[in-house]
Image 1 (tube, rainbow, N blue to C red):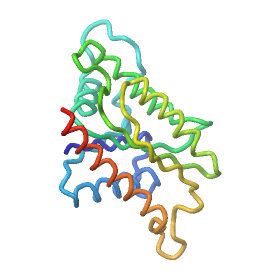
Image 2: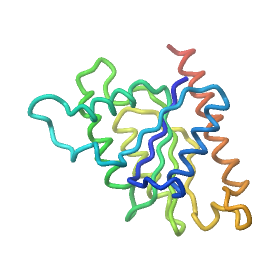
Image 3: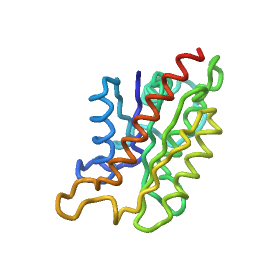
Image 4: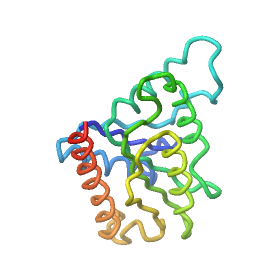
Length: 186
């Protein structure tokens, strides 16, 4: 199974929440024998969305290919003003370049959603990603993880708390099961 982990931030430091979550999911999927690919807009290689007048920019084509190749996705974003990051939404807008394919956008893909915030509003980011994923014809995993950042880290170890690890592992398990169902149906 091919898994795309979409880190929807511009954070490049390995110690940010986004990159710690990305590493956790990547490692857990690999331990279960899944092929993983991480996509992040860090580095600014995805331009602001506009219909290209000529060729699709090469970084955009590579991004579209990665999103289409994956059987399942995990989308990660901090809560920004009641939504996902702008760079994440901009990246997803570029999936419009797949609209003419026989299976456009994210048709039939299963997407898990994870959002974190400093308060208790991370579900707003989940809802924003949910709307976009469904507009892109994806199936959204019915179990998402809105994170209260103050409860994410263990004070002594600075690792994720057992409670959140359990939730992340549930996402991984459910995505594995979702892939099995998709395989049987096709």
